[in-house]
Amino acid sequence: MTMGDISPNWQEVLVNYTLTARDAVGASALFMRSDDGTKTRQFTEATYTRLIRRWNMPESQANIWFIGGIGNITGNDFSGSKTMASPGIQVDYETTRIYVSATSRLYRAQGLNHDFASVRTGFSFYEVDYDQTQPWFILEVRRMRGLTDKTEVTPMLRLIHNRYFVELGVNNASQARMNFMYIF
Amino acid sequence: MKKIVIALAMGITAISSMAATSMKFTVNGMVCSFCAQGIEKSLSKMGATKEVFVDLKKKTVAVEAKDGQVLDAKAIISAEIVDAGYDVVKIETVLQSVAEIKAELKGRK
Image 1: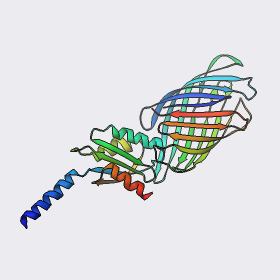
Image 2: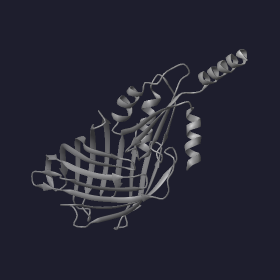
Image 3: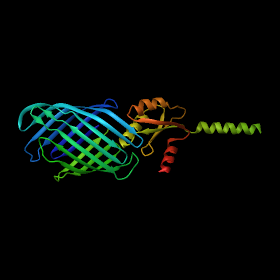
Image 4: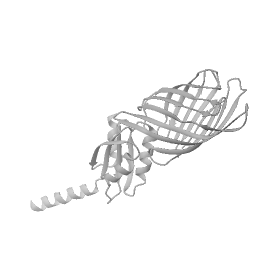
């Protein structure tokens, strides 16, 4: 699986390889920028994702995930690179029509704290067969320490078709945003 | 009379052997198209599989066997659906093709 999250202040590309139904390893490259554009960060990490718990219900599924990473971070306001750890947790609940998730991740290195939290919720406009394009409305609210003191709110149109997933939106700072995912 | 009975019996046997055999699984937790495609992909790779159909709304996975082959329900369930992270709550063997199951499920929508 490969996925990306692209906006002016946040650009992330991730490749994940599923080892088992519960475990995946990957590599990620993340560029972060402060709201005023003066501070930047580049973080490359090796990631591990673990499904801690899943509830399979007749019409829905709920999950708790551990997401962790370790890698190097560089920035334009300090010299050299630092080792950064990024453990986090995600909980989600999904039906064929409704999606809700909450994610919290620590991004910590010596002298740096870019902890991150997001909440996503949305609904599909109508039900489709799994091989047809399904449009969703998704609203994401996220916040990160250290680079911005603003909460980013982004309404997005999500389209899922076969192995492709794309989200397009504009955030409350009038910046365009695109997320994508492709399952191999 | 005896000849008629034998002919009828032979006819029924022939029809039964010509009918496609499929397995229908009711699966909990299968809610997204990525889930469905993952299951379809892995079941399609199995040697005895002729065709696979997944209906998210009806929570159904239908697998049709190739002519003359038998589907191994245990292998299908344990190796593919449960290991992929979903729960199988019902298994049925039906004398229907996947196309017929698909038509039946879509007719119920």
